[in-house]
Image (cartoon, rainbow, N blue to C red; front, side, top):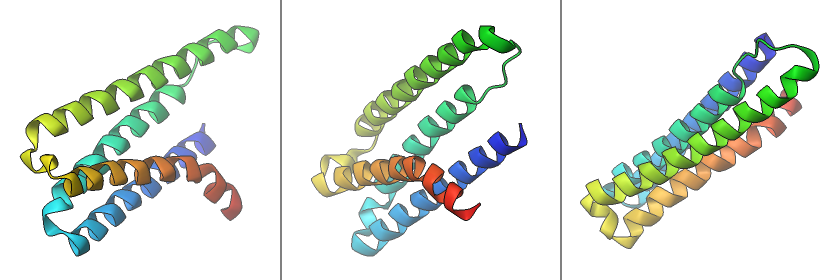
Length: 130
């Protein structure tokens, strides 16, 4: 469906802009926090991207039979999103030594929150511009 693809593209572009914004703010405040902010933003982008792709996956079933498939796709997408965020955060805190500095950890979490906020805001912004 073309409108679903356009919506998914708008969602990805808005989130990518949020990653850039978070990284830019981190660069202005503390250059050492840039990798943390970039990592947090990319974790959010990957998780939300997975959710969007799986939940918008075309379904071959038609009519009333489509309901259970939609619900199954949604639950699979949500579970995968949570798994990506958890594994991403555990991996980031284990592999990036600078995250032991509370300011860098805050930059990672702030970027993740900003990307999630962009994900939530997309329907409002896309609807306004139509």
